[in-house]
Each structure stands twice: as C-alpha cells, then as structure tokens.
Length: 262
Figure 1: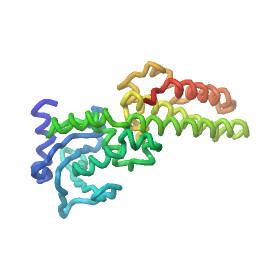
Figure 2: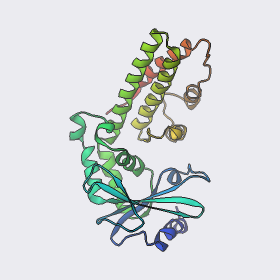
Figure 3: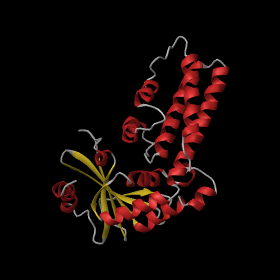
Figure 4: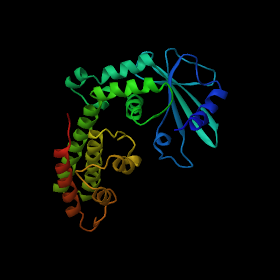
C-alpha cells in the first residue's frame, strides 16, 4: 500500500474516533488485505492497544482470554460494512502462550487450544496490511514464525483427514455410497488444508478461499489442475461412485504422507 491508500483506510476510522490514544498497531485483515475482496465484501480492521476501548456503540465478543472479551465497532462507509476489532496486547500474549512449543508438545490441535477468533488472529497476521505500527506487526510475525502454530494447524487437519478417510472406508464397505462420497470430499478438503498450512497458508475454517490459498503457495505435491479436478468432482459418476471415492481416498493418503508436520 502506498501512503495515500493507507490514509484512505485510516480516514473513516479517524473521523469516527475509532483509533484510541496509545494504539500499538492497526491493520487490515481478511479478503481485502489479500486482494481477494469483491463489491460485496466487508472490510475488517484489527486495532491493538494497551488499554480497553469501550464506547456506547461497541459490541462485546466473548473470548477465553483475560479480559474475557473483545470489543468491536460496526459502521458503513464507502459502500461497505466495516468491522473494527480491538485487541489488547496482553490478550495477544496469551494467544502466543497457547501455541508455544511446550503447549504443542503436551498434545492437542488448534481446535483444542484456540477459539475461532484467536485462530483467526494468528492466521491473518502473516497476510495483514499494516496501517499503523508496522514494527509491532513485524515483531508479531516473527513470534508467529517461531511458535508452534503451524504444527498445531497441520496436525489438526491431518487428524481430521484420517477421521474422514476412516469414515469413508467404513461407509464404502457398508454400501452407503452417498455418505462415503461426502466423507471422501471432506477428507480431501482436510488434507489440502494440511498441505497449505504446512506452507504457512492458513484459513481452513473458510473453505471458500481454498482455491486462492492454493494458488498463493502453489504446492509441489499436487497441481492446481489436479486439486480443482477433485474439488469440483470431475469424473464422478452418480450411478457408480465407488471408483471416484477410492481414487480420492488414495490421493488423500498419498498427500498426507507428504505433509511436513515439523
């Protein structure tokens, strides 16, 4: 972003008094930060401060942190819905504690240790667009790279892959081909997420962006054409789905073996 673009982002916030004194960082997150947004997309901004900001127009969102809530502001500007989420630096420190190597080695995937909004924060940190506090963002990105977050996410997705593969095999053996189809599709989604997460591309909770995430890192283990062929169920025969299901499950198991979990 050039200076003018940054000011375009900051002006709607400043004119509404949404940037508190003592702000440590402000950054755009989500699809707008990545250039994936469209005319109907919301704009999401995170603001990090040392003290809570509460106003008559703010909403509280519970999180398993101390203090146990985030505050958000919603408004419309430039033909868009904006959501501004306020984080305390102390809350972010707690999130990083949850994805320390000590916590990871004690067991558990990200769904066991992070709430959705906590995982979203870490997942978006690497691709956010800083508006204020670029140095703070860079230090936090370094903390993220040194944490066990990537391994937590990969292990979670690989576990979900294994579960879905086992479901599909059982359903296939039982002749429940419709359910086996769904389970095979789920397994494929999970293993692709694991592959992308191993390359630092997070966001498995939002499968709508999976093709974009795939293109962003272009994994060598599988081509986009092959990924898209399975994602869109090309070659699936509703009258005889077993060959497609078996092919997908075989591919899932092959890809899972190629994912780096370290």
